[in-house]
Each structure stands twice: as C-alpha cells, then as structure tokens.
Image 1 (cartoon, one colour):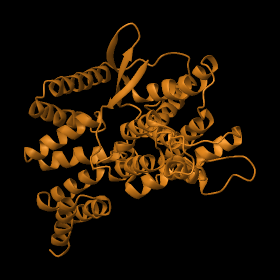
Image 2 (cartoon, one colour):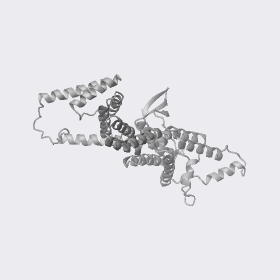
Image 3 (cartoon, one colour):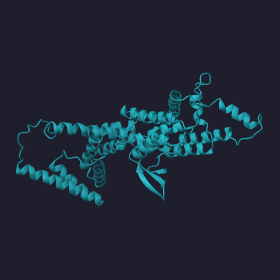
Image 4 (cartoon, one colour):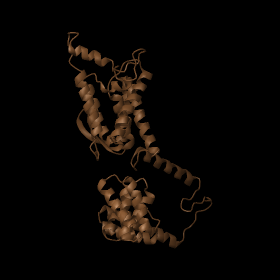
Length: 395
C-alpha cells in the first residue's frame, strides 16, 4: 500500500481558499452526520432526511441542478471525509497558490460539477463526496508541478518511505491503478470511479488549456513546458535526420563529410573548455571565477548561451561586482533565450536600474522598467520600479 504524506514544495502565500474549503466540508459533515439512532422523527433523522435532497441522484425526477455542487460537500462517514480532506490539503495548497483564491474556488466548484456530470453519464446510483473535485485539484497539480517529489509511505512486508515524481505517482498510482486497474480485481464497492476519472480529466485538461493560451503563467517545469520541449526535440531530430544542418540553416548533401579547418576545430575546443570550466566553478560555488570565465566566453563567441540558472547566477555576480555592462548583457541573454522564466519581471527591473543608474541609457531603462511595472506583484519592488521610472522620465 502507498500513501502520500507530503510534497517537496510549499506555497509562497497562505492558501486561504483551500483552508476555507476544508473548513466548510468539515463543518457541513459535522452538521449532517450523526451516529445512527433508532428513533425516527428525532433531530438526527430529520437532519438526515433534509441532507438527502443535496445528494446527486441521477434518477429521473430526483435530479436537480444544485445537486451538481451540493453533493461535493456531503460525506458518508468519518474515513470518507478524512481521506478527501487529506488529499485536498496535500495537493490543493500549491494549486491555490498558483491560481489565486478566486480562481481556485471557481476551479474547485467547476471540478465538482464536471465530476458530477461524468458520474450521471456513467451511473444511475446516487453519489456524494468531494472525491471528484479533489481529483480535479490533483489533476491540476499533476500539470502545474509534475517534477516535484512526493514522499510516500509504503508498507507491504515492511514499512518505509520513498520519494516519487508527482507526474508518475499521480498518473500511474492515483489515476490508472486506483481507478482503472484495481476495481477490476477488488470486490465491488460503492466508489464513484466515473466521477474520479471525470475530475482528473477536467483538472488536467483545464490546466493545459490555461497554460497553452497563456491565461495562466507557466514555468519551465510544468507539463505544458515539458510537452513543448519534447516537441522541439522531436522536430529537431526529424530535421537533422532529413539532412538539415542547424548551425548553417542549410540542408546538407550527404555525400561526404565536411572537414573543418584546424582553426575552427581549435576554436570549438576552446569554447567547450570554457563552458566546462564555468560549470566546474559553478559547482564549486566560485561565482567570481565563473563570471570572469563568462566574460572571456563572450569575447570569443557572443552567441554562446549558458543554462538558465548558471546565466542568472553569473549575471547577479557581475552586477554585484559593478561590472554593469557585462551584467546587462547577461540579463539580456536571459530574457531573450529564457522568455518563460517565472521571475522575468524582476530581471526586467534589474536591467532598468542598471541602464538608468550606471550605463546612462535612459531609453533602454524606460523600456525595461515599463515591462516590469506591468508584471510586478510585490508592493516593494513595484514602488521601486515606479520611483525609478519617474526619475528617468523626469530627468
């Protein structure tokens, strides 16, 4: 048996919307669920009968629109609500942080509705519980944070913990195994597998659409970015196999290999050596030496591009060393080649300040500061940006 207990990331902001959903579910459970009593007509039986109208019942004459939302806030027992709220807390906090409070609440309720529709299409049995909405949240986590690690407790013959990538754990354990494989071998139980699968489909599909249309800002680590990277690699392999030369932009005639001159071979070897030395210094955390090697690399070939984190660390080091022209070039490269960097607005702010205060290039400063002003959300950084922009424009 496998049970996830934590993820490798924490939300940057307090996920109040997710906390509120957990609290509302628990409160409604405590109000509507009491231990069974034999006396009919008492308060317990009255509450049970009153709550039944909010269960999603697909039978003709029993189905009402409000049930597509209300059923998701009712639970059949203690283990039912504990399981659902645990998974909602585990995966919902970070999804709430990414979508914002209003967006997250709307997404959660939409997940409940979509899961309810999926259940009514596949079954005529009544259903209650937040499982479908929680499945939508879990599917959203799969898309937004596929490369994060989930710590899992396992117990078979012995007990231990291990870390699994979220993409594989959610896709294969929670979606495929728990809802498609295990039900074929386990005894029949009253579990709405159709609602679960509909929730996963909605959560995954909605997040992919939001990322693909740029309604939701992405990162280099979400599932949509992974899909785009895979597609670029596929197209590159196809192009190269057809004879395309990515360095010259021409199609090679595969008759004989072009023998490079000794000077070209020597230059390429020098560039490889420089890049290797930069990586070594970065591993050693010797940033000043890495920054000096980067300057040398740019002098030999300004088209060379380092990995994103290396480029960012070196740009920051150069700025700290008051090598403003070199740091500006590094920041410009970062924005040009890693345009989806999640903190690009902070780089724009840094560039604007460098151009304004140190390089005396007001036009470039205004351009970057205006871009930063539109994207910054931190109040302190936004005030700094606006103050600097006003100073440059009034100079």
